[in-house]
Image 1 (cartoon, rainbow, N blue to C red):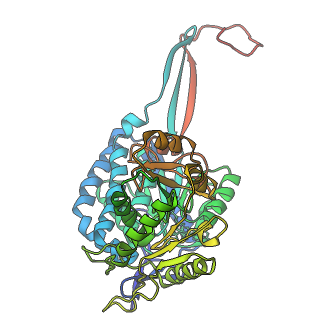
Image 2 (image 1 turned 90 degrees about the horizontal axis):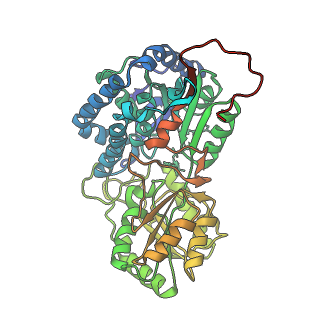
Image 3 (image 1 turned 180 degrees about the vertical axis):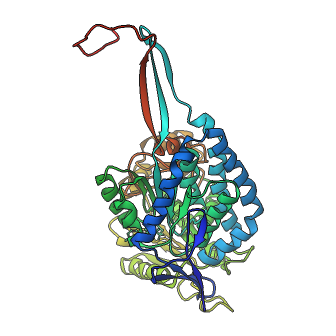
Length: 498
Ligand code: NAD
C-alpha cells in the first residue's frame, strides 16, 4: 500500500477526499513511492475559507511580530535541512547538494522578508497644501495564491508566500503534483514557528484546483511559475477577473561566448549551468553561442570529453554531477527532442540516450547530450527542452549573437562571457531578455533584487521577491488629510497646488 499525501489546511495536515490521485515517483528507481490526492474544487475552497478566516488577525498584526515568525522559521528550517533535502531529492531527482541549494535560495528570500517592517514603510509629504499632508500606505491584498512548478519545490513556494505572508496576506499554495512533500513540510515548519492557523495553506491538485483558485472572487492575487502555455492561461483568466496576476513561464537561455573569453572558464561554467539539475532549471543554459568559427570549433572540442565524463548518479548521491529526470514521460519527451534535432540537421556530438545506471536500470536517467549546428527555425531550438541537452548555435559576429536571444520567443536569462567591457556593456544594454549575466552563467538575482523574465517567460509586469515582490503583494492607498479641519467654502474647481 503506497503512502498517501493530502493537504495542509487551517494549520494541519488533512487527508484528500477526491478519490483522484497523482503518482509521486522516486526518479532514481522508477518506483511509485507515494500518491498525492488531487483536490476537488470544494477542497480548494476549504483552503481559501481557512485563509479568509485567518486574514483579519494576521493583516492587523504589527509587521515586527510578523517578521518574528519568519525569523523563527529560519531557525527551524536550518535544523530540518537534511530531512528536507532528502525529501526533495527523493521526489525530484536532483542530487542532495543541489537540493540543499534549492532550500537555501528559498531561505534567502525569507531572510529578505524578515525586513518587512522597513520594507513596507511608505511616503509622507508634509504641508502639500495649507494644513494638508499626503501619505501613502502599502496594505496587504487579502487572500493570495501561488501555483508552483516541480523543479524548485522549496525555493519557489518560499519566493511567493515568504514575501506575501510577511506583507500581511494569507495564502494558498498549489504545488506541483510531481513533488508535493516539501511544500507541505515547509507549511508545517511555519506553524511551529508561530504562524496562526490558516495563514498558510497547501492544496495539492491539478487543473481543477487551479481553476477553483482562479474563479474564487476571494482570491485577490495569483503568482504562477511553470510552463508558458499554462502561465498565459492563468494570466488571462485571472486578469479577466480583476485579480493581480504575475505568471512566469518557460525559458531557453543563451550563453554567448566572445572569442576573447577564457575558454577553460567558459567550459567549466557551461558544463555546470547546462547539465546541473539535469537541465531542469528555468535559468539553465541550454544554448551556447560561440562567436566565430574558431571559437565554436574550440568550444565543441573542449566540451565533448567533459560531457562524456559527466558523473550521473542516484538522487541521494553527494558526489554526482546530476541525477535522473523527474518522470519517465519527461525523459521520453526529451529523447524526442534529441531525435528532432538530428532530423533537423544538427550534429549529435554526444548522445545521452540509452544511458543506464548500474543498479538503477528503471530510473529516469538520461546522459548528457551535445548538439552542434542548431539554428533559428529549428523547432528543437525554438522550444524549451528542459533536460541535459546543450545546443550550439554558431554566430558569425557580435550583432548576430545579440540578435539570437533577443529574437527568441523566451526572454528569461542570458549570459555573455568576455574580457571586453565595452562589448559586455553594449550587450547588457541592447539584449531583449529580463536577466543578464556578465561572466556569470546563471544570473538568478539575489533575494533583495527581483527575479523575472520577458516575452513568453513572463506575463504581467511585477517581478518575484525583492522590492518588486513587496509591490506585487501589497496595494497602495494614498491619503490626503487636512488638519486643522477649518470650515471651508464650497469649491467647484479641481483643487490644485498652484
Ligand atoms: P507546469 O506548467 O507543468 O506546472 C506548473 C504548475 O501548473 C503546477 O502546479 C501544475 O500542477 C499546474 N498545472 C499543470 N497543468 C495545468 C493546467 N492545465 N491548468 C492549470 N494548472 C496546471 O510546469 P512544470 O513542469 O511543473 O515546471 C517546469 C516549467 O516551469 C518549465 O517550463 C520551466 O521553465 C518553468 N519554470 C519557470 C521559472 C521562471 O521563473 N520563469 C522557474 C521555474 C520553472
